[in-house]
Structures are given as C-alpha cells and as structure tokens.
Image 1 (cartoon, rainbow, N blue to C red):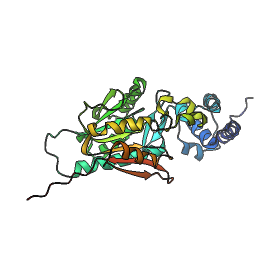
Image 2: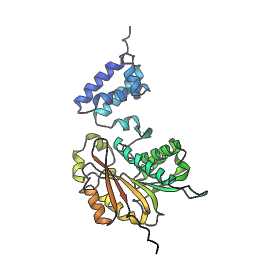
Image 3: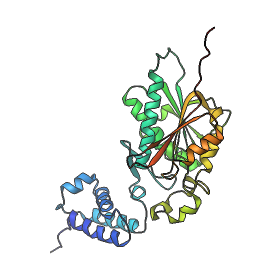
Length: 309
C-alpha cells in the first residue's frame, strides 16, 4: 500500500515555514507562486484547490524550486518570467527583473505618445514617432508600451529604439519582443545611452541604475542575483542619470519629454541635477502608489512664438 499524495495546502504550509526560517519576507506568497508553477496553474488555482493531491513529479519540482528560493534566488528567475503591466516578461540572469513601480513610467510613456499622436492629424506617409527605451534590460518597458498602443491600434505610428550596453540583456529584450509579437515596432542597439548622432526622439524612457554604490551590499538578498551593472548608480546613485541629462539637448526633440525612473530618496537630487546641467529645462517629480518619489518628467524650455508686428 502506497502513501497518499500530499495535498497542495500541506506542501505550501511546509514551504512557507522553510522560507520564513530562511528570512524570506514573502514566504507564503512565494510558496504559492512556486506551487502554481510546479502544477502548471496560476496562484488562483492553488488557492482554489488547497486539498488537491500533488503528483509526485510536481512535488519533486516544487521541492527544487523551494530549495532555490531558500538560497535567495528570486521567484522571477526560478519561474523564468515576471508579470509586468499585463505582460508575462521573460526573466533571467541577463537583466534586472521588472518591478511594479516601473509600471508608472510605462503609463506616463503611453500617455505622452498618445498625446503626440492625437494632437493633430498625422499626414499620410509621416515617419513614425520616435521613442527610445534607454537601458532597456529585459525590454519590459518597450514591450508593454507597444502592446498598449497595439490594443488602441496606434502602434503602427511608433518606432521604439531599445538601447542597452549589455549585449546579453539586449538578446533577452529581443526574445521578449518576439515572444509578444512587437518586434516589428522595435529596433535594438547595443550602446552606451544615446549619442549626439541620433535623430532626436519625441519620448525618451529610461530606468537607469540609481542605487548608491555604498548601499548595494545592504540590499535584499534577492538583488545579489541580479546584474550589478543594472543597479550601481555611483556614489550618489546619479552617475548614469547625469550622463543622460547632459545628452538630452542633442537627442530630445524641442517639444519632447524624457521620463526617468528615480530612487525613492532622489526626489530633490534629480531636479537639482537638472537645474545644474540643463538651465531653463523643466523637471517635475511624480510619486508612485506608495507616495514615494519615483518618476522625473524632464522637458526642454517652452518655446514662445515671437509676436507679430
């Protein structure tokens, strides 16, 4: 006589206790997500059927996932994807895992693009609106932006250039673009930020490294698995942001907008950097849902039309 299979709830309970002992704050949530991954269902399926037996193969897979999570490996790397702005974005060690707070940048980019596409009728044959996603990483921002525009049947009027200094990250961005069917509206370029030779962009999105170098070792253990290149923003966290600011006059259209994700402690520092490096330019900081500074909206000085004599 063989032992009865262990139920979903029992395995999740055991895993939750193990992860809590390992210092994982989200132990219950992580256990449920990993159980769903092992069973091939979403978390709702796990919650809806707590007494369902777990087949041996799924139980073994779940055990392996939990062991990896005990060591601090992020759930997104274990599962190989992360939900972001309604899309399942492929994730692995090549790039930073997209975070919920970055969805604010996507929302603002969508609004900025739509404003420009609808401000006046676009003539037939007009060149696509140029958008840049600087430091694209997994391509999450660009993919989510184009997917949202496609639902509105506006994507054909936009071309997004995804730029990253890491060729490995750029490969992941290509895979995500192809997987979501938006690669036709994207170009990919390996490079360091934007260059003065670029045709100016109407909208520039950037989620650049903004963590202070001295703070890296004190971050959550999960982050030790993610590329340091995508996190380290220098002594005050603003090295890469300043470098991009310096280039904006040559790469942003005169009526364009740059949308930069910033650290929760940089709500004053970024506007100060803009004032120092770009006199006359406008910078407004927007808070995320937690009420923390998260997005800097940077625009060139207003152009006032000369009065007619």
